[in-house]
Image (cartoon, rainbow, N blue to C red; front, side, top):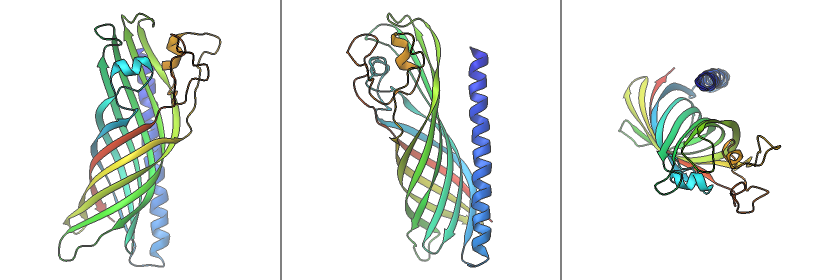
Amino acid sequence: MKHLNLTVTSSIMRLLIRSLQFSVVIIALTALMSLQTNAQVTLKLGGGIGVMSPASDLSGSTIEYYNGSKYGLSSGLNIHGKAKIGFAGFNLAGEIDYSSLSNTGNSEPGLGRVDISQKIVSLKIGPEFRLSLPLVPVTPYLGLNVAMNSFSGETTFQGVSKVPSATYSVQSATRFGVGFCAGTEVSVGPLLSLDFNLSYNLMNLSGKEWNDVYPGKDQRIDSYLSLNDERDPQYSGNDEHFISKARSISSILFTVSVLFGL
């Protein structure tokens, strides 16, 4: 199982690196083509860290996770790469995020132990509209984006009455969503700036589904082996089929990035 966890983590990091390389190449090529016709176009590349706080059904307690109403996750670390192509009055921004969320608690009041971890890789692109302030090195902006979000993780149950004690991998899943942000770039040198950004992200607007990893079996653990953000089509309220509604996945993300002008 440890080998499997290392393999999943390695795959996520390879996806992160390759996606970042691809995004940088595409944005750089776009910028170079734009520079041939418009001298006002700029290019900034960088990255940073942040904190992701789960919202809507991504949040909650481990008890709510066990009963199928929420995902029961707490805030976690974010690392990201960012690129911006600057035009007159707005930026075209591309970003790749890796966020790690987790939580630990009971499956029922005073009973059982549940350890949840979720890894989220997001690819985002969209405009940022700059609000220029004369004579100060600060540029506020408002933005929006479309995003592709990849979810994976694992759950450990210990001493839980209706699920065998073990660590279970959660099958990876991709969802599409949108985000809204407000931020400020602070210039700290001719080619260097700090970017402070706060965003609200609707992460599964499109692609919700119910997936039974082992359709030949009828057991409670099946509901935890995929993201399963759609209602269980066999919902009956019993121990095996208990997810009664679709679940919304949202997050609040605060990041600080260092950007280098090229």
